[in-house]
Image (cartoon, rainbow, N blue to C red; front, side):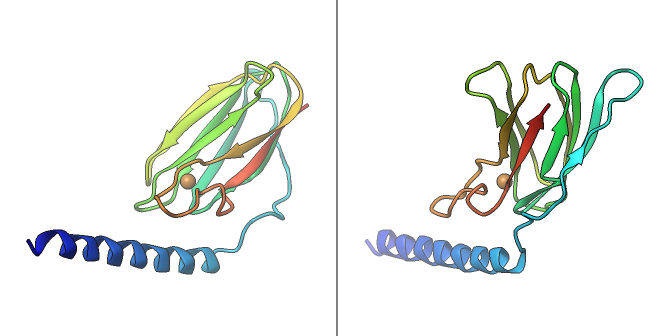
Length: 146
Ligand SMILES: [Cu+2]
C-alpha cells in the first residue's frame, strides 16, 4: 500500500534533480550564436567535406555554407558522455531531408546532396521530458545552400 506514493515521491525527486542539473548546465554553457559561418570547400573528388562537433547543447560549427547540387559529407562527432543527440535538416518544399541520430561519444558520417539553394535550420529535437528540447536549449544552426 505504501509503494505507490513512495514511488511517486521518488520520481518527483528525480525530475526535480534533473531539472536542477539541467538548469546548471544551460547556465554553464553559453549559447554559440556568434560562430562565424564556415564555407565548406569542394574537394578534388567533388565532395564537400566537414566535421561537425555535437555537444550539449551545440553544433560546432553551427553555420555551414555549401553549394547546391554537389554531395556534402558530414562527419558528426559527439563529445558527450551520456546525452544522445541528433542532426536534422529539412527543406519542407524540396527533397532535402536529413535526420541522423548520434549516440553519446560516437561518430557518424552522413552524405546528402542539397538540391536547391536556401537557408535551412539544423537542429536536435531530442528531449528528456519534461525538460525543453535540445533545440530550445540552443542546439541549432543553419545550412546555407548557395
Ligand atoms: Cu541534442
